Length: 171
Image (cartoon, rainbow, N blue to C red; front, side, top):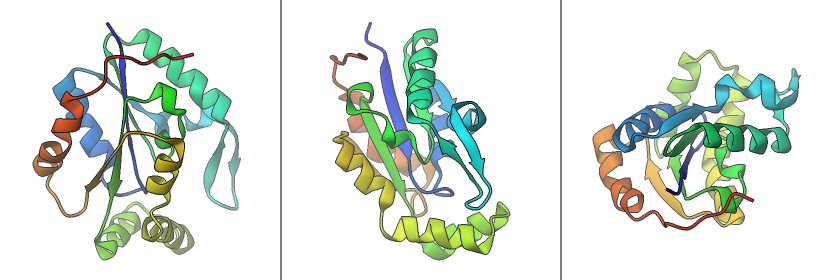
């Protein structure tokens, strides 16, 4: 059996975790919430930027380790999940938010500083996660996590989930 790796990425606040929980449940895949591992896969906490500086080698090693432990594969949700090498990812779902006012409210609710909110809104405006995912060569599906309900998002991504390729190597 070929284990699947599906990444769900996007700017903070667009609905990655919500969608990841639903997809993991429906596909019977384990969910890897990278936010629980940032301390482990980072070189340090960057106080100026209020975020972790992730070590890509540690990140890849964590994913490989968790994939070996899983039965069928992984759903990985994080704003950096799309940075995995193409050979490790079967499908990259990029959540966007076309409603910037709603995204700003969500980030405010999380207690983000105004500087961090601005940084994340800029990342969303310039579609940083989507562009980086495409640059990595991932098979990308884009869904607006701020306009559609969870049910509608699943309907949009279901054809891509059903058609995941059978061949992939992890080396």
